[in-house]
Length: 625
Image (cartoon, rainbow, N blue to C red; front, side, top):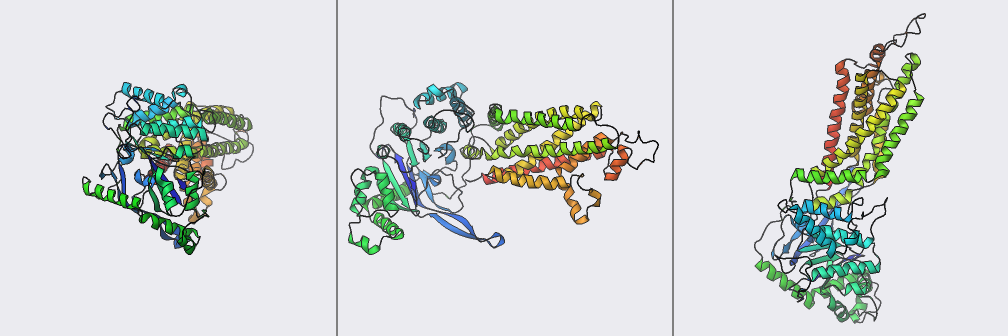
């Protein structure tokens, strides 16, 4: 139970501890190798996070203690950065495996499933990547079908889960889908973070009854939950209450009310126990029955201190400490805190196949984005083509060509802003799946890159084909192919930069601001708004970081070489910019064959660098969550 200043973790049906025996009439979740759930024990857990106070260079690290000699759901599941973590978590009296987060199930608070896919497709994705490659495909499909039946999802198996843009299954069915994706590996321990979030009372009750039934057939279930109704609370076997990072109760859930009554906090008749515990811990309980309550005062800090002290002196605390000592004495071996590594059951290529397939399918099933990109590019191509239609080979044509090529280049840059959403919108999904051992970071990154670049290629080719012939640029096949290649390469490089900026961002609007500012500065140094050779030396170096400059220069070389703009002006003295070559000389552009490909090479190098930065950001910020 997570509330103001406290956490309640309930462990459901730890067979062998509470005396409940499994039913013999139901085949639910066949556990042939294990007759009961694993015993999870935590010993002297302390966890500190580094907070920074002050501004910029004067900011100083300030460690904040989150847990004191306790436990926490992410700590137990092995999903927290070991930095600042002391103590140990044992599984069945043995040190927690380094890859425990890949072996256990973890259902996060916000359901992270691909909304454009069906329930069956999501479960099949989990089975394909989390089950060993040695498991036959037929067996994987059979396990998916079994889970669909047990989770009562058969009727919606082929229905889309749904997203913000498309309507899908209900909240309860979505939650059961999330649970099913974790049950694919048949974990001995299942963690759930606020499993009733966003569900109505009836749906929440049905989800918890499902978990109770699963626990009664040999699975340890540990969850945090916020103010459950009584029908849900009575399903709990073991209850843990925390306040200020310290334990105030840990024992049988059915005995919790008697315990609080004995220390001076009786629960009124017909009051929900969960609400009552919140009132006591938050200092809102107004009926103390012992004299020393009044002496301590009614401040929340004093109440917390008393609750912690009362529990330390209780029989529940002494029994817990005795059991922990027994476990420590009989544990298999003492081990140092080892890195919480992630292990994978499938190869790189197998992961790439499935993740790419899902990414591409998600793109195709989201017409709001894919079709819109094509439509917008066709519209812009028609507008630009109409404005610069049938450009002439004269001085006005020279100016029109410059304007058209500049607009085309900058449009390719700004049109890639949509790539910022690639990693932001699926951030929670990726973090959960990566930590759970679905796939490698490189697999996810490469899949997203390949799908997005494929989309950029299609839109760039369509845009080039429409705008090139409407404007009437140089009418040779070679010139058209170079034009299309340059426009596509500019889109690739700008997309890579967008990814590098947005990879570690969590808000799309903020990433868009950063990208817009960057593109504006790059546009200034593109070669149209200011004559680059005239820029002072201490600012001239900025032009080497301008994506539009390289693309604009390549397009100008491709278009202007071989053109003559003075044929209609034979009677008057010609300026020094009659030919395309003369004009390129005036702009300080090397128009040889190498000059053209030099710009392409520069764009390629920038693209590779930006992609590498994006990958490093993605890997670093998701290493520990």
